[in-house]
Image (cartoon, rainbow, N blue to C red; front, side):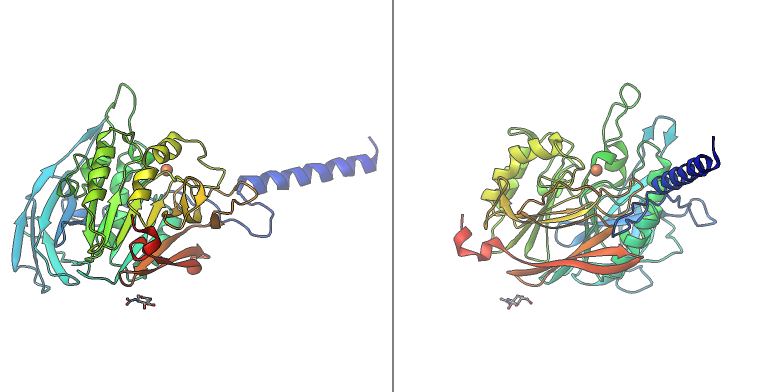
Length: 436
Ligand SMILES: *[C@@H]1O[C@H](CO)[C@@H](O)[C@H](O)[C@H]1NC(C)=O
Ligand SMILES: [Fe+2]
């Protein structure tokens, strides 16, 4: 082999090597460099007292109560002392304790206590257990009238990107968080549910976190663990009985005197005749749009999606075929989904066409999990898709009054929350052309 030939071969090897390195780091040489995947972080229990309360989170129950959920490593009373002053001892409530097993894992003691009635838009202080924890926690109840501000983030996981998303959410001055599924990405490793509970506690102990399930909550293993949603149902109990639902996997609630939020279950039965379908039908019928102008729905797998990821899944296509009519007839204003790790906003749609009386569909599955972003799109962009981008971030929904709300998407660009898309939403109940 001649000298020139050898040099060319060497050059080829070097170029190939650089190519492989770039590929491994997920760096794609295009005009915009996508943020790389960040690995899972594990959050340990940070107290010297191993039996002190941990993984505290709260969720709204009815219009004026709050469920406080926390875990201790060994048995301790399910009791909350609370009040409007930092001494947190004016009132008290007791509740229930449960635990679960998953393969060789045994959970801690999971406590659920409902407190209230509480004043709207008010800070309460609370202490956990009996004797009460030395640590005093703080929460703020949602307003009883509009305006209200929601933060919305799906597919959160527990990576450095999640941390960045949570930091931005914490600064957003939100009243309530809505999560359209895929929380911990524990994927059967139950310690990761504990770690997730600790990661979100600083936020979730202060404002209600209302969640529904995604595929990462199923955690069924044939033969060895044949039931679904064991950890999710035990750890993230939502107010389903209060909305006449028979399952923690779908429920609804009213907030701020003018918003009805419906959490649907993409990974349980949704076909016509199923209990979820019948429940949804009855729930929508009960909404009086004179009193409750806004109706918001959350699902996990999006019904509208022009990303290449998660096309053709039955939780998207079959659920849409089964339930889209119900939402359309009821003039639902907006549907939030996750699952696709990217952001996408559609116009008002019904049966794949723009329709002024259909809901706006928004995918907000970009919370920051370890699987990374879904960067490939179907081209050309369909006309009904108004904005799409694969970046981590979160959304906020400022509901100002009975007709106007401002939706904003904030991406975690370089760890700063950069406002990247926003749109005014007007409620369909205020549109005479959409009276049903
Ligand atoms: C509702 O809020 C929007 C945005 O702030 C405002 O333009 C509109 O006038 C308000 N409508 C009513 C009825 O207050
Ligand atoms: Fe998912």
